[in-house]
Structure formats: C-alpha cells, structure tokens
Image (tube, rainbow, N blue to C red; front, side, top):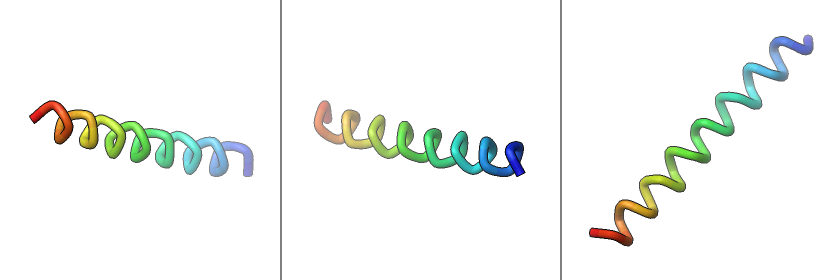
Length: 29
C-alpha cells in the first residue's frame, strides 16, 4: 500500500511541477 501511495504522490508532484513550469514559461514568453 505504501508503495502505491508514494507512487501516486510522486506522479501528482511531477504533474504539479510541470504545470507550474508551463505557467512560468507562458509568463516569460
């Protein structure tokens, strides 16, 4: 169970970072 929860958390964090990075790129452009 712990591994599944950790995997989901990591994926959500990566998605959050990508979206945040995309917003920064859009603002810069």
